[in-house]
Amino acid sequence: MTTRDILRRARRSLAQAKVRTILTSLAIAVGAFTVTLALAAGEGGRQYTEEMIKTSGDSGSLSVYPKVDKPKNDKLTEYGATVDSYNQKGKLGESDIAKIKKVNGVANVLPSYGVQPRYVTRGDGYKKYVAEVTVKVHRTEMKLSAGSLDNNLISNGGISVSEELLPSFGFTSAASAIGQKIVVNFPKLTASGDQAEESIDKIFKIVAVDHKTDTTLYYQPALNISVDDGKEIYNYQTLNSDKYDGLVVELSGGADVKTVKESIASRNYEVYSLQDIRETLLQMVGIAQWGMVSFGALAILASIFGIINTQYISVLERTQQIGLMKALGARKKDIARLFRYEAAWVGFLGGLVGTVLALLAGFANPLISKTLGLEASVRLLIFKPLTSILLISAMMIIAICAGYFPSRKAAKLDPIEALRTE
Image (cartoon, rainbow, N blue to C red):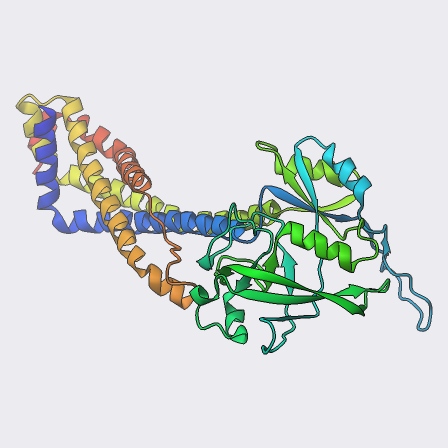
């Protein structure tokens, strides 16, 4: 018998037992549906996490702070007794920058300039507001409503404004704010950190308007200025302008973040990286994904026994047919292939139905995003064609393996005994 004849006969046999074929295929479809959905959710979760990390900081850099020795809290402190504060080993300075620059994998070290504005306004005749002004050191991607940034950095004399703050300044839209001026008053700071009477006004031009997204961690509406402007203001405000609260370490291309982090930490610094958050989030996504895959695997396992049972029943029902085929010259391997092909058809139909149903579930992406309070553009179910094809192929292979013993039994039937069966 040729392969085409065996395939045609296998389809005919399955068509004659429609109900049994459909029920067995549905059992596989449940597992295929669950696994496909789990893989899509895992892919969507990973892409969402990557986007979150990309818009929340520079994953190719490290934040370094002075080492803090925390006191032990294993005993209660008597009321009225003097309690020592944390032993902070001062701020970071030029010697720390020089030390960290010597670490392998470090491309550059930038101070974190903390500036303190007194008020922010558009100029004479406009109200003055208290707002946070930060120095954008990281090349973190900002989601812009208007304007543009070169290499995700703010140019000297430029400032970015969060879209939520525009109405306070009298802007009706993000586009109308671009090119307009913002005046920020920066006071001198005393040794204790209080604001002195002396101050300067810095005029900035709005070059970009950013907005909050669901993928941005710890987003706070603020005004952002360039590193050079931040340095100039920091030097004006601070008495010890060569001391910094923290440092930003940029890594060279190809450097391993974890290795560099451990090397800097060993030099008695506190070191933080977005990679730590990324790994934790991806691990959580992976656990959730493979948990769902496990449920799908259980459904597939149950369908294996269904295929075996269906094939054995088919062998018993078609004993005379098998005997006649052998009497007409069919070989043992032809009979075995017939039943394996039938099992493959069942696996293909089940895998196809389950995958198609999962793909249809992908149209619920906007509803899922709305239910979770995310932006409508966020897709948490992302399907890959290659994954679907491999899954359907896997269902066929599993079905063929499940039909091995029934096909072996059919191939071993004695033709004479089979023809005698009523």
